[in-house]
Amino acid sequence: MSRRYHVTTFGCQMNKADSERMAGILDGMGYTFVEEPNEADLILYNTCTIRENAEHKVYSYLGKQAKRKQQNPNLTLVVAGCMAQQEGEQLLRRVPELDLVMGPQYANQLDSLLEQVFQGNQVVATEPVHILEDITKPRRDSTVTAWVNVIYGCNERCTYCVVPGVRGTEQSRTPEAIVAEMTALGQQGFKEVTLLGQNIDAYGRDLPGSTSDGRHLHTFTDLLHQVHDIEGIDRIRFATSHPRYFTERLIKTCAELPKVCEHFHIPFQSGDNELLKAMSRGYTHEKYRRIIETIRGYMPDASISADAIVGFPGETEEQFENTMILVQDIGFDMLNTAAYSPRPGTPAALWDNQLSEEVKADRLQRLNHLVAQQAEARSQRYAGRLEEVLVEAQNAKDPTQVMGRTRGNRLTFFTGNIDELLGQTVTVRISQVRPFSLSGEIVVPVLV
Ligand code: SAH
Ligand code: SF4
Ligand code: F3S
Image (cartoon, rainbow, N blue to C red; front, top):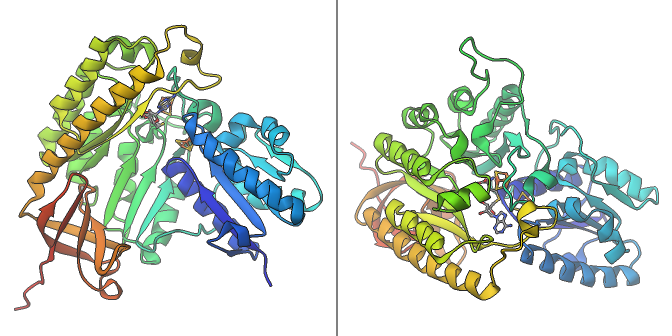
């Protein structure tokens, strides 16, 4: 019987995309996937270290598998991703049963690292490397929507954040590689692509060449033009955008290119200029507001989502209120909120003006309450409307229903047969709205 593997993924879309590529490599090595970790001969945890609590779960899972390995020495244990990069050798000291600890830059090299393991080595791969162009076929979760990496790493230095340390400096893939991957996806029947990068609008700065007016030759705006006409791909999304690089030229292009969906994920982190400065974000709340106004000028119905942090070191009640005011003024469709978590190796973790857990929890709760209210209000605009929905899956809770998303990224449920509708773009009349999802009925096209 062939060896079986299990992958559990923590963290962001970047990690999910890496997991799909690593699973593809394991498939290529002749392994088969199992849902249940306790039936696997190889377990891979693809980890996250963005906040402290992201790590606790991994250690608890690892503890259980380490015990299993004491009974079954043939079990292979792999820790990949950002926590692997951050902790490196330390992970081996805490869990000596581990076979392989590998940073995110090594995702495409899983096969050669495993070969070293099977030769009897315990392997740690965390040295910064040039990320190899992906030659494997990812094992994608969906047959309709796919992620495509366009830029790895981050060159910012936000004072709270581990990502530059664990994901390394920016490495843009070439436009040719991205076009080739998307062309193949279109041929395989995929309908939607989400382009991925930590700061996707910084794409191309590290690629050679510039225009006569001093612009980089390959900007994200240019890339959107280059990938737009790929056959079979009907929808293009992208995440995450950094306010520092979000230009009007990009906004205009999104408005002009019909396949680019009107949804923008642009984290602001704080609504207070002093805090934004302490965070080293490189913009003011006024600049952020102008970006959103410009988006809405070109695309009045655009969905806007973001990330925000409360309880950053030194945040006063008044500064927190400025975040609340920004959220109130913008009206987000969705907001990922988090209490500040001090991270090893980041400047802000060493400052002596840390806030108490109580203050952070209280502010988080107040912000979340406002976010839920706003999302509900934003959802109201869909009531009674006809929306274009790309069907992605059956509704896990009700098999008589299917689910998909509007162009603005709202989850939408309606009655239908998944075998007929999977991958179809249909028109849905929205009859029920909830803060983060919608329900409706399919509008059957009248044939004349
Ligand atoms: N590159 C993106 C964000 C990537 S990290 C950007 O700059 O917008 C995802 C989110 O995690 C961040 O937007 C931030 O809100 C949150 N985050 C990062 N470090 C954090 C920390 N130390 N404590 C709490 N939240 C954090
Ligand atoms: Fe982290 Fe800032 Fe880079 Fe985003 S831009 S990944 S928050 S350092
Ligand atoms: Fe976590 Fe790494 Fe993503 S730290 S949020 S998995 S980039």
